Amino acid sequence: MARKEPSENPGRLSQIVQTYKMTRQADPRIGLVIAGVGVVTFGVILALGFVIGHPIYAGILGILLAALAMAVVFGRRAERAAFGQLEGKPGAAAAVLQNVGRGWTVTPAVAMNKSQDVVHRAVGKAGVVLIGEGNPNRVKGLLAAEKRKVARVVFDVPVHDYIVGDGEGELSLKKVRSTLLRLPRTLSGPKTTEVNDRLKALGDLMSNMPIPKGPMPRGMRMPKGR
Image (cartoon, rainbow, N blue to C red; front, side, top):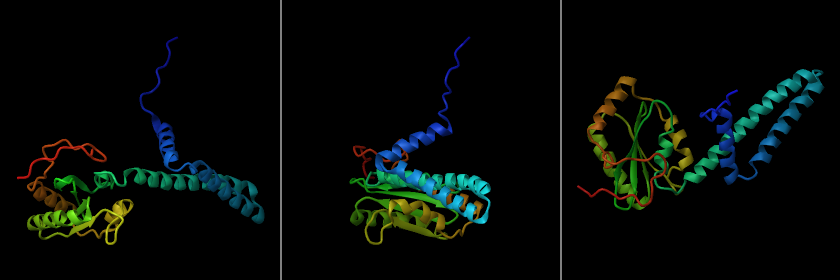
């Protein structure tokens, strides 16, 4: 009888296991925390079940709610661990932007200087968002120049700009996604497409270079200025 070859697709369970291992490296107590949340949630619901005289139904409900609570806590801790690995690395903001979700068109590295301070662009129904990362003193000028260039092309749409960092007036990496999702939607679908098409004419410094997903390597050679 022929042996069945293992599936090449790791499957959902394997992905969860890999995520757990990655999270445990940054958060060694993750297992205890998740187990504690599950036990406490189940215990509280079961106790309520005894109080109202329906322990069996409460026990079933407790198992479901405990699993849900464990999944929520695990997801948040895994996200925190992922951000912890990205913070401080070049291109971290681009990696976050590329995972904001549907409805956003992201163009990494629309502007960059010799010190590898960089500006990324995202376009959605909220308008144009420019995200600068690097040395705050240098990236401010780079971001302002890019904003003026964008405004000349799409003067009739909102242009939001942020600098990623933990300093005063800066946007922390973990809040990039939530900040974009909270911006007011002012453009229709067709208008968003039009804005994207108009901005394509601007190009970007990295348009002729392969941009790897995730953080950019520190030793990447920069293109010569025009």
